[in-house]
Length: 368
Image (cartoon, rainbow, N blue to C red; front, side, top):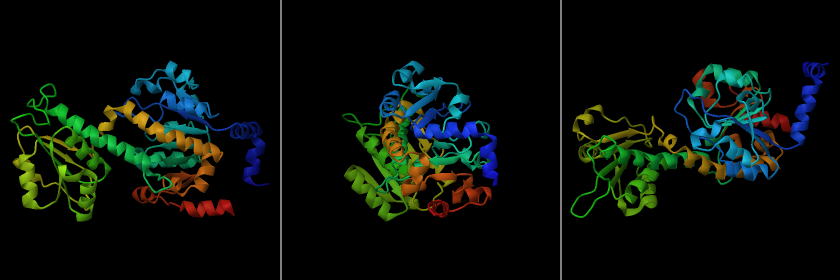
C-alpha cells in the first residue's frame, strides 16, 4: 500500500467531502486586504459575483472584505455571496486575494487548494513559498497570465489605472489644497500649460501621457529605444513629444518640467542624481516603480478587474476546475508560481535560491 493509500484510509470523510465539492461546481472565496498594509484593491464587485452565482458558482467572502471598495457585506449578500469569517474563507477550494497571502494564512488553507492573486513582494519570501509547497497550494498570479491572443489583460488594466492615477496625483499635488503652488495642468487663455515629463514606456506611461494630454498639459515622453518611441507616437499621436533620452535634452526637459513621472524604460536607465539641482522648486516627482496610484481608486480597479474575472472564472467552470484550466490553457500556465507542491516560477526560484520545475514537464507527466 502506498503512502497516498494510507492517507486516504486514515481520512476517508475529508476525501469524500472534497469530491462532492468538485462535482457540485466551483467554490471560491474572497479574503480582504491586510489592515497593516496600504493595499485597498479587490478582484470582484457584488454585481460580478451575482453574474457568477447565477451561473452556479458558489462564492463566499470574508466579512468586511469589501470595505475598501465601499461595498457592504449586505450588498454582496444580495448577489448571492455567503459572508463568512476569514478562517472559513481560507478553507475554500479556491481563494481569491488581491495581494499574496502570508504564511500564517496559507497554513490555514486546504491541502491541494488554489490561490489566485496578483504578483507581490510576499511571493519573494522563503516562508511564503515554503508554506505554499507544504500545503500543496497551486498559486496563480493573474497579472502574469496572458489571454488567448497573448495580451496581459490583468496587468494592463492595473497599469492603465496606475498611469491615469499618476496624473490625478500630479494635479492634486499642484493644487493649493494639495500643498502645491495652485496651478492647473491645463492652459487657459493667455497662459502656458504645465509641462509633464514622462520617462519610460509601457501601458502605464502611455495611459499617463493620454491622461495628461486630455487635461491640457504639454507632454514629453522619453525613452532609450526608438522602436518603443515609435509605438508611443502611434498610440498618442502628435500631441505627445516622443524623444530619445540624451543628456542635454534630458537636462533641458527636467529644468522646465512641472511634473516628472518615471517608470520602466526599455533599456536600463538610472535618473542622474545631479539633475535634481536643475528641477523647479515646486516640481512634482513620482516614481511608478515604487508607487501604485490605483490604490487610491480601488473601486475602479474592482470594476475593471471584474469584467475579466467573470470570463476567467466562467471558463474555469467550463473546464471543471482550476487544475483543468491550467492543463488546457497555456496563457494561464504563464502565471503559475507553485503547482501541486512544486515551485514552477524560475524567477522566484532563482531569487530565493530554491529549485524550480518546468510546469510543462509536470503537466506532460499528468497527461501520461
